[in-house]
Amino acid sequence: MSTPAALIDWSQPWLKPFRVLGQRFSTAAAASDNWRLALNTIAQERGIRNYLGLPISFVAQAELPAATAYEAFIGNSGKVPTRDNLHDFLNALIWLSFPAIKARLNALQAAELAKAGTLSGSSKPRGAARDAATIFDENAALLLVPDNAAGQALIAALRQHQWQQVFVEQGHMFARDAEVWLFGHALLEKLVQPYKAITAHTLVLSVPESYFALADDAKRDWIDQSIAADLVQQDALIGRLTPLPVLGVPGWSGGQDQAFYADTAVFRPKRSK
Image (cartoon, rainbow, N blue to C red; front, side, top):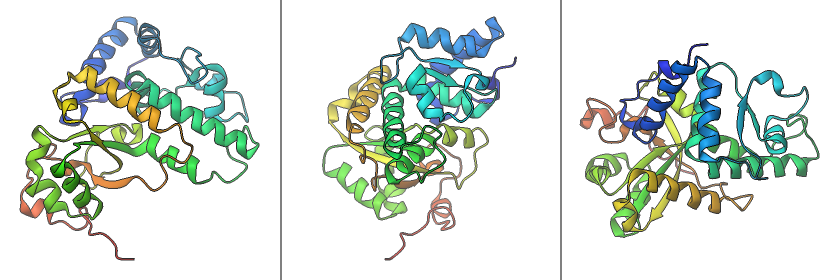
């Protein structure tokens, strides 16, 4: 079976954190002619486990029993149903990249399912915590800024949708002192064929200035462990996500002039209450 990785341009700037793994995966999948096997080889090598300590493996969708919730199945078995498509491949890529966050989200979803008294995941209302976890899982970006005055000013401008300040006046920060890491696999799927209006639900983190001196792998591990610890509380994501038009990130799109950021159909002003 052909690998969905072949559809991805790994040179895109937003894929920098995944580039080494993605290219390695593409090579392994081509060699084995079985991209789930390649996924499982890397998962086993990295010792990836779910919140119950069960080894994570990626299996065919047909292994998901009828009337069993997807998240409950992952929690109880460690098996992640993975269809033959780009969306599920990217979900697996996130599992391999941020295993602690994915395990914590799975634990949160499983707890919400148990609280609702259902294993099907569809017969009762989802609830605010489960909705927030789903949105984060599918469409999140992570914005890391230094825990200093400049970082706080960037956060305040972002929350007020002051796009000129975020991307132009403070745009120089993205070259060294602020980072955007993509997490949502549906968000990554949209960016395979990018368009200007793609907007992420963004979790903003104030980090020690020493973070920015770390190597990329150390940064990824820091993010993974820090956010996973933050998500221990069931309501940790409620009300914390803020919009970010991702192709506004300096260097992530061509033509980022004044007119680019003046497009209010994409860079929308904050609604007054």
